[in-house]
Length: 195
Figure 1: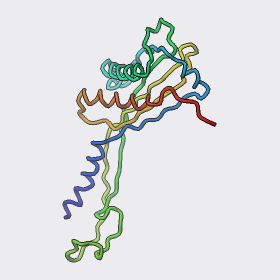
Figure 2 (figure 1 turned 90 degrees about the vertical axis):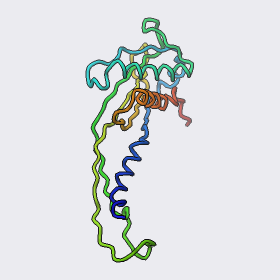
Figure 3 (figure 1 turned 180 degrees about the horizontal axis):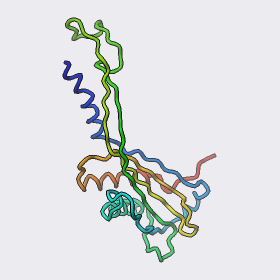
Figure 4 (figure 1 turned 30 degrees about the vertical axis):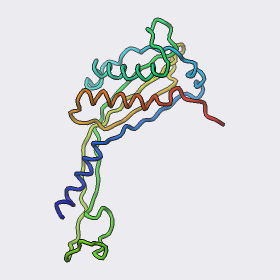
């Protein structure tokens, strides 16, 4: 029983890491909602350069563009060359940050121990000391920007954050990027808020 109580926090942590979610937020210029709704064609801004080579490399860039093209074209937008006078431009940025997570757990998961409620009670139980488990992980952030092509003004931004899986296969990586982009663009273009 003591071994199980020691393993439980580690099992829970690994379970949550395996099913980590993608946290998505979007923001837009409320004054540009009608303009966003009228957009039909788009082109890509030049790819970002410099920075972390784990993020800014041709493979990640191609994956982001492929997922974004699929999401936008499924909504009826047409990709054109930057010289063809598109309605809007699309750009992306990314980052990988080191994160720490600390969880303090005791054998009774935060509740005071009462032998009267323990059907497995088989004698005196010693007091237990809560234990803190620290876990280090990497969090990836993907930003997707929509820029008005005529004014060069940022009118919409999506942000997706998720824990990165260690040693993820290229297929898993593409699926995560596609899922993040799909979630970000789920409500694009934004609708005017009702008063």
